[in-house]
Image (cartoon, rainbow, N blue to C red):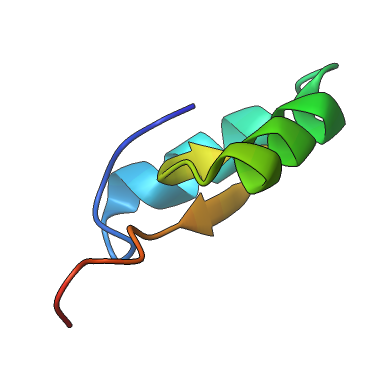
Length: 52
């Protein structure tokens, strides 16, 4: 998992790391089930309570 702004170059880098990770599917499933924020399993999750 990585925490960053969704428009940050770090987010793109984190997604590239996830693309080659052997547990990215499990990571993504865990993040979806637990309401996480940041990049998990190659997907960016924003905080649901975050003002936009």
